[in-house]
Length: 399
Image (cartoon, rainbow, N blue to C red; front, top):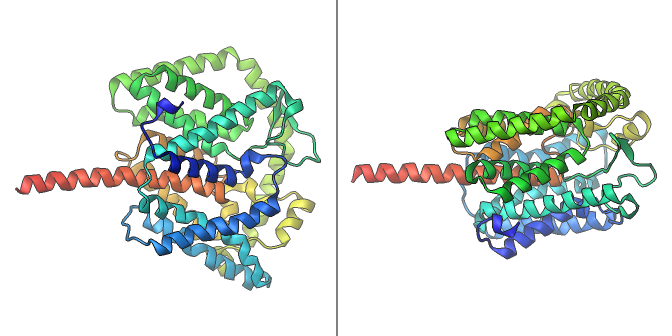
């Protein structure tokens, strides 16, 4: 796995791996102490902000609007929550996690390479895949992704559904090695792609599978090289053949999960209506969000209404309309405006998130915000590189 990426700064990779592990509660380790973890977060996020302020550097990047929303929105949402629900000033601690946005500027300040981010993501995704497979084979030793330990794990398609929150690390790695396979025709890259595809399946969540499948299919439209396009088409045909061979099993899975989720889907539909009604109940709530009021816990425990189950609508409820607008503008830039500059795997990552954004937000907490900002940074590196080349060419022409 180490040979698959060009040489990197090992210290940066180690720091990013450690940060990724922390943000995922050490891969959803059952003995993780959330209280201690939350207190540690204050030092980490405030420390990152402090570093940016100390080493501040003017940065011109194509995602300045989105980053501005990420930085300013939490403060406005905080005051909105105080105004609407009359809660104490101490609820500000609920917004500390937004300090992760500072990572974008730290990437620039310390000149972090794309390869270093990808290597860190690969390490985390690889660890998740190994844990998933081992725990499926021997569930008696399971210590990760257990979710609420007071409840039994759900079984889907004969497999235990562990509750891991690291799906976006997996999808980044999956699409990265898909692109690398098409470009280099390297067998190791293809093996890693298959491993992460299996890992994606083992999350046993239909929207993730749909996002992966649709994005892989759409990759044909982004590939210009004829040999790579032929290889992509061949691999997609092979994958489709495998799916057909196991169609009975997969069909049973979707039917079984659909039956199980019928009630959940009804609750989700009600959650859309419930939270949207609260969002548009006032101009303040619509523009700046409701934040994370104490009532959320009551609605979750007594009404089974989860903000996390309604994707972008839930994000508008908590953070306001500008938070959603920033997501849509970033998608426009990645998938269209800068489509020629942005690498294929980043476009596929953004597209897969768009597929299930109505049910799963592309970014909500610190972990998902970290992966999303990392993709924005990598996109900006490629855009900056293209702009620099164009500027260089113009200078040469003027000589």
